[in-house]
Image 1 (cartoon, chains in turn yellow, red):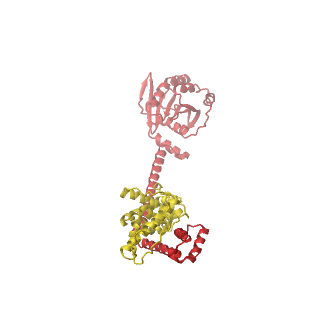
Image 2 (cartoon, one colour):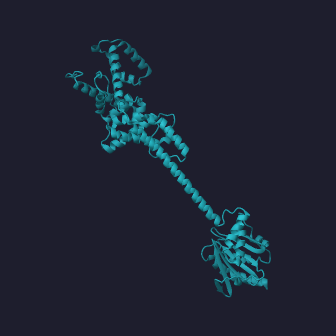
Image 3 (spheres, one colour):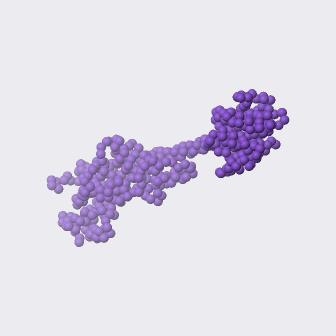
Length: 197
Length: 294
């Protein structure tokens, strides 16, 4: 599990010199992850302008809590945990619909053969397919397949059990393949499914 | 076992396919991972499946990373950090200046009121400063009170009444019970002695409550001294006894004279309490001094 809870409660240091050194440390440890945070936020909220707001919130909250961040621990995982906290907040604010809940025991057997991703598909088409997957499945794909977090780290970031990460991952990958297959079929790149296949 | 025909996927391949994603996630136990690697080395179908999935991830990763991050986003966060530091530093400086001003003001005020006078010179300067604002004969009692009672550290356990009687001497020891009888019970007698200040001798009693310090000061008149000649008008005149009063800063002074003595009650009690105490005590004191002088 990631060891840090995001919080806006921490105060500022009173001494100026330690404050400057804190800024330098924050810039060195946290800011390099701005790109990953923004891109993941974009896929999670589906809107570039909102993603900018979310990414900025993530770093401002991280700055406020930075006193409690232990040097040498996983800053990137800590920032992603704050990202998911912020994303939940923004989703509640913007959409007012609950997160997906799926049976925790659901484990998809991963036996279906996977169609190759056609070379002709553009990045935009792949992203459109990803964006059509329900957000909780999309989130776990972004964390594990794109950001290469372990199941354990992803579970900590999303505050769910590791088994839930695995089941969502399995289901999400299947849904993504189906979406990509639909895109490919619409372009005539792969043959339509036959009845009963 | 090697299975090269995709149409003839056997149970071993089914197991292998089911573990491909976990294999890519590095989530398989070591023995399961090496068993799968061994199968993949001999099974082109499963190896192909692995490659397709690996390729899917790679394409997905590239697609997500193709989104560029606006440069101003990082600049905005950096600016926030700096502005935050500046504002906290500014607030810190302002608070330090404000605290300095308050401390200086409090220290100045306290110094003017006679506190923090740690050298004999500064104490005398203070006595001269407050004395200059009262009539000449009022200065006599006030000066002794400030010099002897205000600028003094008292022992935690003061001497007993018998010891004070001995210190003050048999001639004036009869004053002690009069003072003790009239001064409110919450005042503790801290000191009763004879002292000399500015070449003048005094009989001096000091009492203290939680909120006030009080002196009863008696001194012999010197040639030509009389309150009535010191441009002082009596504030109270009862039973043939004139009481004079004055005040400066926190000090209240009430005084009367007998034929040969001047008697002062000086304290920092609020309002008229100081004069009222003198009114209550003066007849007995005057009678005592009258007997002494006859």
